[in-house]
Length: 487
Image (tube, rainbow, N blue to C red; front, side, top):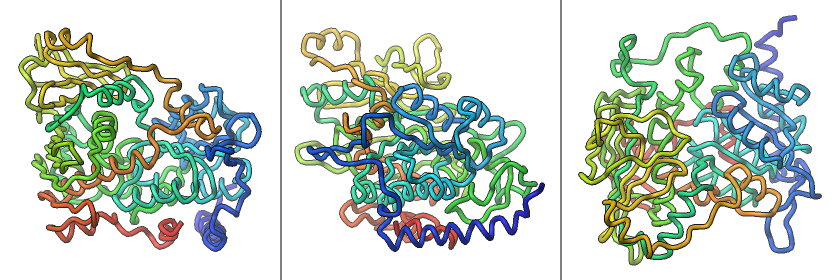
């Protein structure tokens, strides 16, 4: 029997609004009695000694990887699956793994029906959809594992950090290198004074991206949005759009292609910045920049440029000097690298390597970074890969001076679940990841307006560009979704 789509959405919209009205009126957390409690020391804990009851929102593509990784820890019971397209090929593997688990296409209906049985959620959906899901979950006292970047706009990230604190939940951003070797090494080397007085960081990701020009389509010459196509029968397009302004469906917006569009994604920087310079941002206490200066190739007002160089200028922090962090993306936008760079630092959890300058024997250079201090230079890769001192002769000289680096007690997904159980603390909490994502959000605005931006970290305002300053708040949400900014 075919559902009357118009009547279905009218009825469900009324129920959603009634549900959220109750959430706002009661202070949210009291709507469902949360299973999480606080231990005597103030740490989070799940009632009883059992596993965390986990609802997974977004179960295809990257979301599927998170579902599997969280399940493989042995610390979670998967109690609900939610995806806007349960009939898509990319959701089938997870559905087959959990054939008896309740399924939903709308996360609001899931919370409405099963909220009392859920301790935590995973959020593996497009960048622009992270915010409403995470905000509703936290307001209901649910712990959140959210893919990076946290939110789609500076304001969304600000509200998500506030909600984490207000509702006293565990919230972990999914930059998994924050629970592996790179995290513990960077922390130990800073504390031991090996990494100090950093003044310059070069970060690069020159792999091909979805929005780069191809023989079939000149993305850089786009003059508007894509033409309307029939909505697949299995897809709830209205829920997929969440807070975004109305768009007619086109397959060029879904399944990862959303990352190409300013309206839906955060580009190469939002995708890879949190894997490449995240530990430098945290342990060097970079905070928010005072300037971001873009140099773009193939600028377009709808999609991300064909190449972007972004110079982030961070002010001095106490005794730490100012830092200029320069980001390079684009297939031919290769960064300047030291002559003695040597072989790349690689991690198994990265895509095939890209081109690069100064690469020995004509090899390609994978995503990575170079960190310059007043006495030492370090090269690094992405995700969990450890730093190395360059040149090699200097590295050998420093061997005896390097501190012990502890091994991680848990991977990133286990760290989150153990935090929910009161056993650890999130290593990439929203409080930690938020300023990183906000710094990147300013860089994304610089790409969108193609202008140098001056930013005041105290007032959190862009002071030299009125349009850009307005974009800190993001594009206004559709009327039905305004209430998520009040949770």
